[in-house]
Image 1: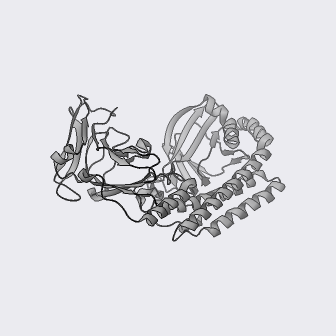
Image 2: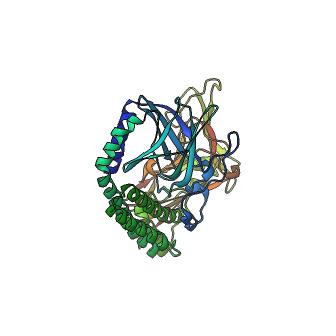
Image 3: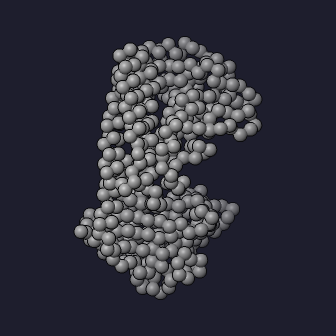
Length: 455
């Protein structure tokens, strides 16, 4: 937090008086000639090859659609550009998020004379890293790591107070970078060791962690030499390396799951050992009971409602909604279909305030100490519109915090399997809710609830 506050303090003149004029996309790798596609894109860490393979649905970044965006902030002090890597899946565990080079195009703010990168340990010029052309100015930044602060100005006098402020705090900042990297390395090494003890075929990351350790040692040497900017760089490389280990362990844990929230312990790196303890417990207990939701196959409407499923449709007059059994199925002859469309296509709602259609299961009794496995299949042929959530499947133990969400069509418009693993802390009733929260047409089938009893 101290480093974050120091960074914000340095940028305060631009943040306090500036206005975001645009949010621009960022390209990875060296820029191509104008009018052509960017040339080869590559990440800054060769150790990326140590990451285990996994399905794209689990959040591995495709460099061609990196998710880096830059805020263009204009003020009387000049232009501040803040590129940030919004990596898919980073809410669970960020990856390295580094690149040899990024580039972006902004509208020209007049005659650009100087481009600088601002950090807590220095103001570094970016010589020959900007180029003008008709319609904008391309800025290139090397050695990108998660985020950057790029200052563009034609008046170098605004840099003097900035340099003075950095000089006054750069020694403290450099020490904090080392302390942060050291603490992170200790935490990652400990958790990774616990994971490696429980996984049948653990990811081998000793070389990466050893390199991170060497980088921190190098940072300590540079600190003694009072080369504070190099201290920051070496410390950040160490943290890049530890993120590589974290991402690899997380990806291995979710490889057979449909989402990072499928297990209560894969939502972050710190709880991965608990996930593998739970997996081991499932393996030890072995014996699974019968399906506790016999009507989850949706084969007969009378049976579905007789077992206690509840069906609720929105009263929004702008919508035409419905729920019925459909002959397109993953198992058996029928599936559950939920659909919603605009009553007046010329006046569609921008976003729905409540679910268009809900289907809620009967109560299923579960008991403390049980591990509950919830499985099923979904199919989306078209995107769900007018909603940030799309199709939502949740259970009453974790609620919407642990819900699974689909907005885009499933692969090849086919059926996609999902899994939820839940630990029952307190005996009670479990319910499953299926909600279409936007405009669309979705199908759900073969929902099963299996309870694994305590040892």
